Image 1: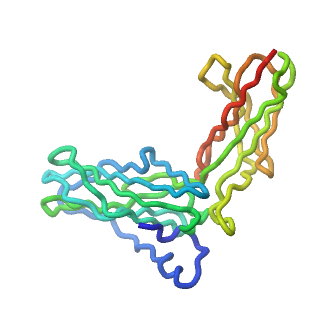
Image 2 (image 1 turned 45 degrees about the horizontal axis):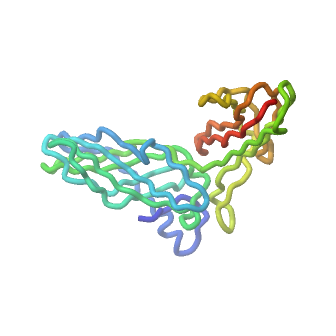
Image 3 (image 1 turned 30 degrees about the vertical axis):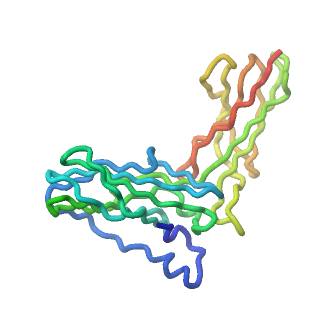
Length: 255
């Protein structure tokens, strides 16, 4: 199913469906049915950019002594008017008593009226039915991050460079603006702490050299002394609303 409402900038007939968010229900159950695990997109993190549609997979594992009969569509609830509803789940038995029910929903920032205010922590509401007519309904059965995608670059110069000379490492941090008109686009992400990292050419491990902040234009710039051949990159740890991202390492040839 398509997204119901993840933003307030809607008008006319669309607004009728856009704000039709289900009323909150209290948790409830009958018998011994239990939800034991909820996983969204494999790692409970969803990153949405500005062009490609994103399919979100939701898996809910449940148990009952009679086995699991099925599940209702999962509701995904986020900040503001954030709301998604999956298709009908398919339940696969792992044993006589335990099944994992999976379903998905596709989000497209170009057509689904995403609001930047809806980025953050989301929750999965789930209803599971057992073979003996027991059931469990649980608000906030699991949580996940629904985040704005980000991009990060790094460029070290001059190259080649003599040992002991100064290297300038520049870069830029941008993130998805779902509300940009006429279409979503990436915009500057200012005042964010970003780590400058380095790894020797012979190593696979980056270490942090220093931490700086992006300026008002999302730009990054700092200097270091050249020592050995290796790669410089910037690394952004992410925020509640924006995904973590690493720049591609830029090789410096030290003479």
